[in-house]
Every structure is written in C-alpha cells, then in structure tokens.
Length: 272
Ligand code: 15L
Image: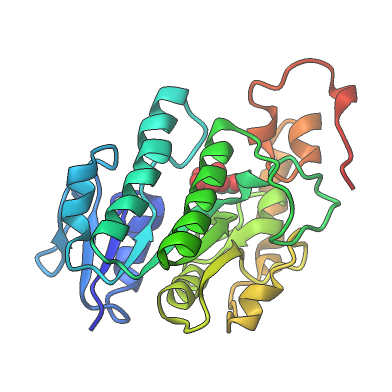
C-alpha cells in the first residue's frame, strides 16, 4: 500500500480531499503548518513549515507519492510568496529527492497562463503568461517539476487548477470549474499512471466553455463527471452582481490580471 503525503491539508482543497482520498489511499499522511481543526483519530498529521528543509525532509520519510497542495494559494506579498512557494517549492522537491519519493502531483494554477485572452484556446505547451506574483511562483514550481523529472527521475504531474469547488461561482468560473471528485481522478493519474514522466494537465471538469485544450489528460484516462453548464443560472446570477472590469473580463486570469494593473486599458494585448 503506497504511503501518500498531502501538504496543505488544512487549506481549501486539502479539507475537501481529506474526505475523498482515504478510500483510495488509506495510508495518507496529512501535513500543514497547523492541524485541521476537525482532525479525527483515524487521520495521521505531522506539522511542517515548507520554508524549513529539515521539517520537509521529516514529512517525506517513507513516502511513495506526494500531493503538494501546500503554500500560498492566492496573490499576496512577495515575502510570503518567496517563503511558501519559491523556497517552499524547492524544499518540497529537494526533500522528496533526498528521501526517495517516486511521484509528485504539484498544484499549479490557471494563473500561470492568466494573461491569455479568454477567446484564445490554449494547450499545455504555451509560453507561460503569469498574471501575478502567485502565478510566477506556480511557473517556478512547474520548472522545478520539469527539472526533478529530467535530472532525478521523479514522476511529476503539474495540475493547472482552474477553480476548485462544489459549483462554478461566476461567468469566468463556468470555463475553469473543477469538481472535487474530478481533482481526485487527476491526482490518481499523477500517483498511479505508468506513463508519467513530466506532465502539465489542466485541472478543469467537463466545461463546454473551456479555454484549455486538455486532451493529454483524456489520453491518460481522465473522465470528468462535473459539467459547469449545469450551474449556469446560478453562476450568471452571481456575475450580474459584479462590477464590470475591462482587464479582468478580457483575460483568463480574471481579477488576478487587474490587481495592481498599471495605466491605460487600451494596452490590453490580444495575443490571439
Ligand atoms: C487559484 O489558483 C486560487 O488558488 C483560487 O483561490 C482561485 O482564485 C482560482 O485560482 C481562480 O482563478 O478562480
């Protein structure tokens, strides 16, 4: 039975996956800075600060595969991004190598490519266009994944997660929604599929408005069950409550693109 480490266990995705993973991976080690408030006696938890290599090595001991959901998960100050995602990301891959971990599933993000316009359909091989310091930190994580796969033989799957949740929250999220059970499928592909070397897959359910060509995930057996359009009415009603924003509404990354955006919106660039 493989021992799987999940970082970020107290965060949004971790909280949901803690419930869904045990039937598939019963030997699940949870980690975060602090334990989840509702940790049960059936669960195993070990605290670690990703910015501390020795602590990260300690949680990688005896582990076969890692689901790395830890770190900073939204735009934030450079210092926090540096500690949690840049230094933390390096420590995670390096500790995994030192401890002989075989596979890593890295939670990347749609914000690695957020400055592509919404009308432009992109694959997993486009030049990154990060929309934030957070997006840049995820490009760095994908770079680490590629390096540790090619140089050290780790099997690495980067998931460019769209928006994870029970339902799409607005117009933009109709294109990028990811149902929790579909994320579990993608994690299984990363942890178990025999053909993984280094992959970048989009973490999105079956969304008719998708901007992403995710055919590689389907080749690897991904069969999402979530369909964003089933929630169209709710998402559009929520959208109607929001203020129009020329930058956010044009680009895939939404409000991450308009945060700190300088100057004239006439310089919006149509890469397509
Ligand atoms: C992300 O990467 C974030 O982790 C999440 O909180 C959402 O903001 C999501 O992107 C999104 O783009 O909606």
